[in-house]
Amino acid sequence: MTQTNMAQQKTAETPEALTLLAALTFAQPVDAEVLAALDAVMAATRQEPGCVDYAAHVHAEDARRVVFYERWQDQAAFDAHSASAHLAAFRAVVGPRLAGAPELTFWKRLG
Image (cartoon, rainbow, N blue to C red):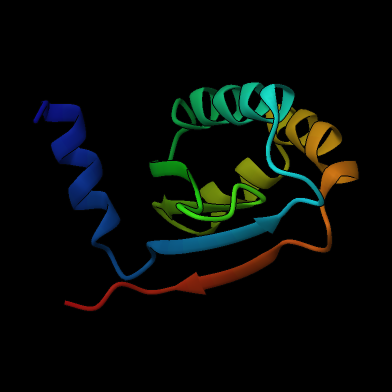
């Protein structure tokens, strides 16, 4: 683990840190355009200050379902991400393809 990763890991353990699970369900299985948008938003987001972890996962049995696992240093880092141009670009691609509104749940780490 690099020094930067170790510093980010410690930062994530503060009381201000938050975790987000964002579940998206698409009307159709994810296609190449959605996969490209996922790759782009993950690459850009991982470079943001305050981003500790950001990963998307497709359901093992239902390729219409994607979940993001996000860890943020604090609410301000998440708020900056929410206002970012790359997240707006991602939403423009995937929004019309969703079967419904994304489900966002926030979590605090124990221990």
